[in-house]
Image (cartoon, rainbow, N blue to C red; front, side, top):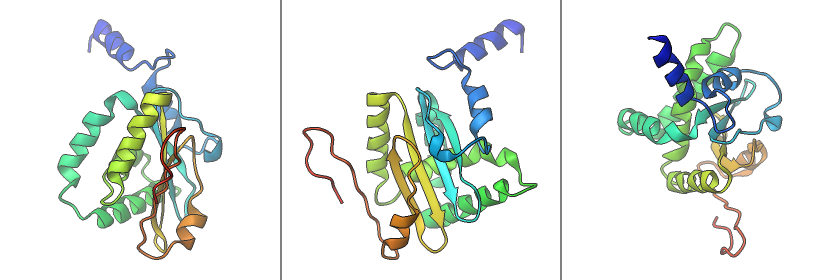
Length: 192
């Protein structure tokens, strides 16, 4: 790639605050650089904190402007797969990548596939897509918590940062799908 094209490509990946998205993503994705509770998604991103039982959680960032195209590509590949098997598989791959000697390159695809599972959950996928869209419109960023354990299954939340869902998931009946949406001012009561 010529120098001019390289500079132009680099400009295309700049965030609104002028920082390079790819550099930010390389810095955070799959790294243990601090407690996930302290992570705040930068403007223009969708962050996904992945918390799989047995390994430390990590937060992956995705450029909000590219999510629709990437999720559509994953949808073409994953929509014919069994959802629950896919969730178990990506959780196992995340755990393998997090262990010493694990394949760190797995984080390049894990965040994207896990985002797809959050946005296409059979029962609450539409609500999650609407919530992420709403958060991006209101705040310019969104943060999903994706928590999996073999005994409790998958729990997800959309909020300002990481939300520890373990107590809620452990108390929920096996196979239950619970959803709670905090009403905004003037909205109806929360849905459950």
